[in-house]
Amino acid sequence: MVIIIGFIIIMGGTIVGFMMAGGTIGLLIHPAEIVTIFGMLFGCAIIMAPISVLKGISNGLVNILKGAPYNKEDYEDLFKMMYELFQLGRRNGMIALEEHVMNPDGSSLFKKYDKFHSNQRAVDFFCDGLRPLVDGRLKPEQIGPLMDSGVKHIEHEKHAPVHVMHLVADSMPAFGIVAAVMGIINTMQYLNDTNKVGKMIAAALSGTFLGIFLSYGVINPLAVNLHFYNDGEATYLKVIKASVVAFALGLPPLVACEIGRREIEHRFQPSAGDLETMLKTAK
Image (cartoon, helix red, strand yellow):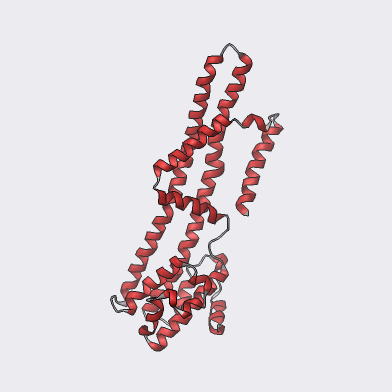
């Protein structure tokens, strides 16, 4: 919703200002320039990025319309799940976690926390972190570097769509100039018709306007928003990593969750007291 409001303000300010200066909307709309600009935009993106990255862009644009990827309820669900699992491991030994981390889809404990259980990437990341500890392949102090590597890989994967969007945005002003030059070339054959020349030059310049507007008014702002959205997704995984590593090193479940709590950005972060109360009173 916030993104839509932002675009309304951008479009409204641009069009109203243009009309106040005596222009009309029709002067900005020229199909030939629009086809040229958008053709170069999509062609550039296809050349730059593999299909997986292009899908990441489209999925990301849909996701950012929904707002932040996680809210307080999502983190509450996560902490309750981790606390219960860590308590189970502390009471009955790491072997008690095997049925859950080895078969997360069938875990009765995970199914209790639907917000976490429905997040396949988070479930895989959580279980991949605990699995080597449960089956004894790694020592507790080796879990941290392993999970750090997983977070960095996911961050790199999420950065690619944002990077491509910035590159496309950087190209748009130049594409606008190309469209304008093409319009001027077409205009040169009508120099004897002054009325037609004026209209054709105006149409050509609308291509420059469109290229610059799309770059700085649409694509770059969306890329920045997607960057923040991806940071929110990475933060969720960092909370998991911090808590799992702390538990692996032998810290009590409550302390392990407290360490994870400190990774959350302030607007979603419960206080230490609220977290303790929430976990100790959870059924």
